[in-house]
Image 1 (cartoon, rainbow, N blue to C red):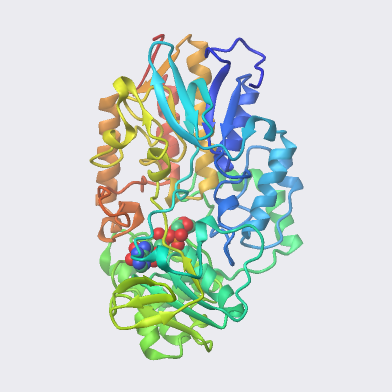
Image 2 (image 1 turned 30 degrees about the vertical axis):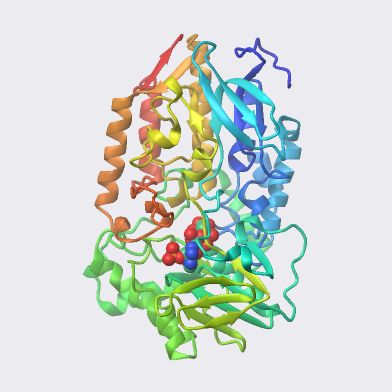
Amino acid sequence: MPSSPHPATAPDGLDVLVVGAGFAGLYLLHRLRGLGLCALALEAGSGIGGTWHWNRYPGARCDVESMDYSYSFDPALEQEWSWTRRYPGQAEILAYIEHVADRFDLRRDVRTATRAAAAAWDGGDRVWRVRTDGGTTYAARYLVMATGCLSMPKAPGIEGLDRFQGRVLHTGRWPHGEVDFTGRRVAVVGTGSSGIQAVPVIAEQAAEVTVFQRTANFSLPANDRPLAPDEQEAVKRRYREHRAQARRSPTGIPGRKADRSALEVPEAERTATYWDAWERGGLFGMLRSYNDLTTDADANATAADFIRERIAETVDDPATAEALAPRSHPFGTKRPCIDSGYYAAFNRDGVRLVDLRAEPLAGATPDGVATARGAYPADDLVLATGYDAMTGALTAVDPRGRGGLRLHEAWAEGPTAHLGLAVAGFPNMFTVTGPGSPSVLSNMVVSIEQHVEWITDLIASARERGAEVVEADPEAQRRWSAHVQEVAGATLFPRADSWYMGANVPGKPRVFMPYPGGVDVYRDVLEDVAASGYEGFRLSRA
Ligand code: NA7
């Protein structure tokens, strides 16, 4: 058990138990140590890094630019680290996280290959008791869930998977070390971000790639490239200002806020604007071109049409191009993908698309994949089938709050969390980038830093006041959740069967989970709550 310079408040010495050692968990350890608190992180992976530990599939790359997708808390850190590409690949992000862990000596407070298997609030001792998969039990005054929004793979939902005799590879559980596809016939199921990034890279090696698409997705070119040293230096010279702008932006990435409707400009001007965003590349550029693309279906259709035209231009075979054109949801209502050569990959010999809307998936067979129309032999089956997003990793720990209330029961009608940070009935438990916060609609590192700083400030404030228990007020939570739904209801987001809505997991309640009001607006709310002495939270001795 690590030692604390201060008298420990929990019986066996831990002030805070953190679950997860990705970007969020590691920064929590650093901040808590700075406050003189004794903290330990449990990490299920064999190494630190969270998402970037697990997602080693070919082509895995962040969809936010390197200079933005990095910690801002230490000015020296951001000056000394150099990125090689505009968009960081998995290996480079993991190397960065490992550098941070070593630089701030964080590894000694992480237990890797240790999964938090159960957690229960002990109201008598006012501690969380957390049991690991190895049978060890920890007690800590606070429990902070830094478990990630896209970390618990959903069940693939493919009949007969266990009968398939080739290799089965899930993008989010990719093996360490190189996976060689030379000469192999590869079936890829899923065309979200992971599938779209993996397909062009696998296609360079494999003999055949068959992509099974249930929903055509909007994908924009990343226009990834090496990051020129002078370009990087220019950002570093004004990094503090750049970070401040990120914190006060709607998405956590600095940029101009559009002030016009897509429908109020002449078509030629609009098309030129979309071309500009398309050629610059990136995730939010196109969506930010006009102020009503996420709220007005007609405005949205102008951008969606533009993207469909680019797909039709890129893909040689008209039937494949048409099947790849997304028509089932407005642009941006599922997280758009950014790709490096996804659509062009279908022009290669040996790469083909199977449209599961035209020929539904029957399941896996011993030697491939079968649809209603026929059999597709494969040596490897790549599952890019996604996650039980935003709540799956939280409910998997099965936290039990007051009176044994289980989190999945509290969330039976959909997840409700006060400010996306805390759940009424679960004292002293906090969620980083939880449902009800901007999280997956933003640059995650910016949102993670904000939550970590806010949660640790609250813990410090509670200690100063002699409070041992901090809990979200149910009425404040109800009001915040209603506000999230009201803001979401004014957008086009609920029109898509997306993982934002819980729609990708059978039986999951359909509720829009992230807060779509913007990182800037949300930051103001949290600052006001802290300034008010944490209105909406009950701080008490017992
Ligand atoms: P996503 O975005 O959830 O994509 C999963 C894909 O897998 C999506 O196209 C699904 O189709 C498809 N899918 C899932 N199950 C099946 C079955 N049973 N049959 C056919 N197709 C299926 O996950 P990713 O890993 O790509 O990306 C997650 C996020 O990580 C991404 O948004 C970035 O933020 C980073 P559907 O659309 O449900 O019809």
